[in-house]
Length: 117
Image: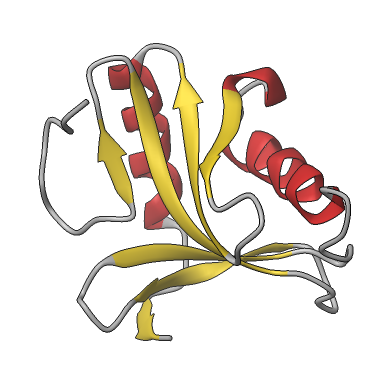
């Protein structure tokens, strides 16, 4: 399924869902979203951290809980579609893509600015 836009944004809009690129840091001092960064190729990702360990899916479950609260969407609408066992992940948000896109656009404006890393 091709995205409707091909930019290097952390948020990619498709016809039936939205996908968000993230980098997760487990065993951090606190849970939360810490900002937006760029990889070496210029692609953006959202930086997130959880206090749980990366074992038996605990860090992923905590990430889904945090994203559900941050984005105001049901946990059942979120799925890690790439990177279940990796720090780099892609989370898919099912639902009405234009509505989700508007929520995320407003939410992203509140994040700390871009940095390399």
